[in-house]
Length: 249
Image (tube, rainbow, N blue to C red; front, side, top):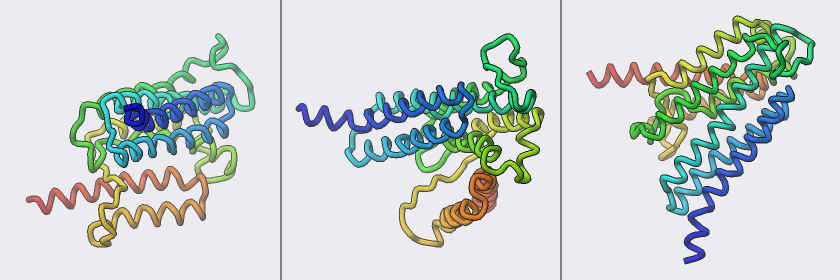
């Protein structure tokens, strides 16, 4: 009985590691260290992937695990990206200044970044009651959106002269990115999952394509590749939906 109880808790323990990583990332994001925040979000997303895998392999899926997973994602992939966007907005409004996010001197527009946190919360709540998202996603998953937002800070840090840097330094462009982020999180658009049920190229050509595209662009463009990969993923999913609709008719 003890071993069975212990086995059931293994996925939950992994989920709590996701939450721990997200909590540490939160501290770094508040302090303005976007690189360390990104590292710990990446660690959290790693645990987020393996908690579900562990639950399936051990056959111990539970409603508790589902709720705990969403709560952990709310911090790692919801709160932290919102804080990172607040820091990016602050940098765009008052570059090269160190102003705490919680002082009266902080421009009010800085807090617009939290719209990402609100959109992520809504997305996660919908996911828990949506039975359609087993083999595909409806809207962009919060971990993917978190990677998108955090990549902006990494681009500024490691690729300050890239073609994307002027946009990331523009306050209104960042506000637009925040709004678009909330939309793609919650839009009624089916996005394919990267779960290979078999290795048939005919059935999985788009999965092979996005994986190879991601590898090639990451090697060539590094962090600049992340927004391009996610945009390509969304557009490819949209094209597949149109193709499926035509075939159905």
